[in-house]
Image (cartoon, rainbow over all chains, first blue to last red; front, side, top):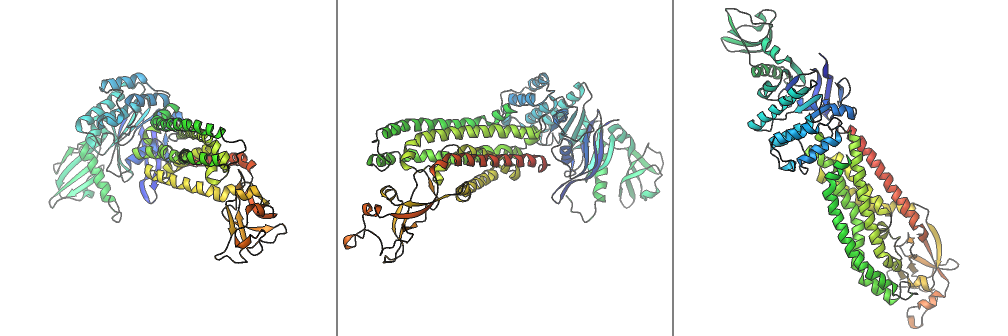
Amino acid sequence: MTAIVETRALTKRYGRRTALADCTLTVPAGRVVGLVGPNGAGKSTLLQLACGLLTPTSGTVEVFGRPPAADSAQLGRVGFVAQDTPTYAALTIADHLRLGAKLNPHWDAALADRRIRRLGLDPSQRAGRLSGGQRAQLALTLAIAKRPELLLLDEPVAALDPLARRAFLQSLMEFVAESESEATVVLSSHLVSDLERVCDHLIVLADSRVRADGEIDDLLATHFRLTTARRDPDTLPAGMRVIHAEHTERQSTFVVRADAAVDDPSWAMEPLGLEDLVLAHLETAADLRPALEPQR
Amino acid sequence: MIWLTWRQFRAQFLAAAAVLAAATGYLVIVGLQLHSGFDNLPADCDGLCPGAGRLIGRYRNPYYIGSALVLLAPALIGAFWGAPMIARELETGTHRLIWNQGVRRGRWLAAKLLVTAAAAMLVTGLLSLLVSWFADPLDRLNQDRFQPLMFDVRGLVPLGYAAFAVALGACAGLFLRRTTAAMAVTLAVFTAVQVLMPLAVRPHLRPAVHSEVALNATTLGTARMFGFSGDTLGPDSPMIASLDIPDGWVLTGNEPQAVRHADGRAVTFGTQPCRAEAGGPATRECLAQADLHIAVDYQPADRYWPFQWIETAIYLALTAALAALTTWGLRRRLG
């Protein structure tokens, strides 16, 4: 599995505020990767570091084995849809497409036109008058008509209503299905349900740290909720890693990671939904946070 | 990239072009009248004949309007073209769109700066050319084109100011990240530089000429001030005067200097030549014969164009320095 994006001890600070600390992760090729984490986890910072909008304070980030935005060829291989999907309010849709055509070496004009037509948008309309969903679609069109090998999307659907959200994710999946050479997509969100629909790989990020990383199917197959009479997590069999534990007076509930479910009359072990899985990791991250550090 | 720059910049440029066209129409019509009026002056009119005074008075308003346009154009261009260049992108977040196209940030900035600065220089240059043509008769009569405010609104220097203002605005926009703040800072810094230049830099571009000017009929006739100093007039009150050098720039201009005899003695009320009968003022005709002198530091008229070139070059150098700083900042500071 070749790594498309690789970060090592990646750190970004703004003055005294740390946006991303000591983050090491890899994004495998040809996957649709969901990057999930609470607000302030550093998702946006990580994506902007990966596309070269930001430069690291320390550590390294490499895309296709090279520093991001190293030259125009590198810029042409990476598509980026920024948070809130910015577009030029005064320019028309046609202007935006022309901009993309002029500035990108591998611009696919036919694809861009087809998408705008299919969306039912009037090319002579100014971007400032589009709805949030239409603007997001325009930004996505700009990013995918570049024919990128890596497409980064920073919370593209966060501000959209459910219908626009579904339409946007639909468009994204069409791009993934249609792209001839296996494109890699990284999509960040704080909503697991969005990611579950389109992603096949998940990276859970909390406090800049990778809490879980893997194919979604694998993650689902190895995470379980274990309900039992109250007991110490240390008494669980080896091979079960406790992610999260909750105790009431008589009962303990664990989220554990194990290769397979283990039948035992003293407990109930059941598979976990993706949302609960992510939450378990995030709650653990919150518990581990030093008590002195102010909660964000 | 040039297409995009032009596309984003089109509306502002057309607005400026409209103002320029209106100013051209007005100043050409009034200017033709002014020029024919000037041609009808007597050939020996040296700026003092009655017709000259009437001409200057009649065209005072368009003269001031034209000069004010050239004075304000670079500042407004810096604030309205330069400051939003980067700040607006940062404010609306579109920098995250445009800097991820297949064009490096440095090239993006270079195209933006070059196109905008070229447009600024074109507009300001045409305006300066127009106003210089319009005001030429009045400048010849007033002989004051080397004076600080006049120097700024004629000839070549407005081009340098315009390019500088654009780069200043872009740089302020990058570091302040807010359009309105960048506009305000651009105006403030630009004004400060424009005030500082004639006060602290321009007088020293070349060492001033020091000369003892004889008071004769001509110099006395154009003297800006002539009289005696002191709160009360007594026998010891020194005689003072301040002179203008035609088309030159008297650096001691606002401070009257002591009038001296040929041997260097200061003239006082008590020792003045041509004492009129019954205490009346001495006649200028008599004083003009008395071989009196005044010390003057000045930049002579033939340095006008060298000064225009040097100052333009200084501003273009500042422009280049600001562009380099902005390029550096774009790479570093936004990282």
